[in-house]
Image (cartoon, rainbow, N blue to C red):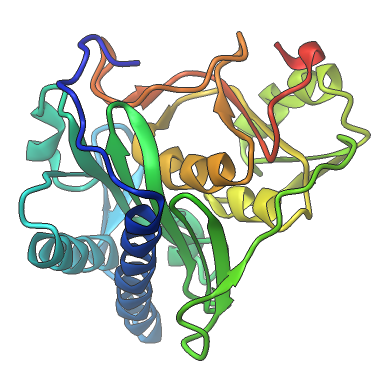
Amino acid sequence: MPSQTPRSAPALSPDRRDAIARRLAGIAREAGDCLLRYRDEPCPSALKADGSPVSAADLAAETLIRTQLAAAFPHWPVVSEEHTESHAAAAMPIHFLVDPLDGTRPFLSGGAEFCVLIALIAGGNPIAGAIHAPVSGRSWWAGARAFTAAGRASRRGRALPQGERRLSVAIVSRDQSGEDSRPLCAACGAVEIRRENSALKFARLADGEADIYPRRGRTMQWDIAAGDALLRALGGGVFDLDGKPLVYGPGPDGWASPDFIACRRAPPPACR
């Protein structure tokens, strides 16, 4: 992924990382509330150059997130999906990756499989991240530890246990990339395949509802960084097809990510 090595990143304690992740979850929740307000009436949208949709909801949520991050962490830059000027950034020691609405197509069609993603990258590694699912009201976040909460009643969240289980359930995308990922599912010993849109697949891994998420096909780093932070806190992560943890930053293909395997634990040798 990165073509350059970023300057040394600041050292953040485990407690500081957890506190940052909790703040990111709060920002993601506010962005989720913003998205839900756009579901009450027709939401204007258009197609970007790559054929993917962008809506007024994406742009409003991104503005909210960028404003909140600038207020809370003024010295750390933000790279976000819809703010194309930010994509020209060179390698940075620390920065945020933001997808304000992951799953725009399901969102526009009235579905529930969309979420808000925010991750903090330091030294090329995701060290804190948050995923929020606006329809269910659930949030997942992680710094040194991983947490989840439903709604606003439990802002501190419940710690997710690490633990291991035998690989059996794979989760893939509903689109063509899901079909392309089937050979990886078989190579990793999965006996059941489930489907879901958006980065909520990472939440299913964190909750223990699935064991592995293989992906062939183009994705962007802001699509996966928050989920990677969550899985790393649980002893797993997102790995390339050689079994190496992903490193984040601009590369020859911009902010695109390679084919990968996401697991709640390190992938078994058969997947590498």
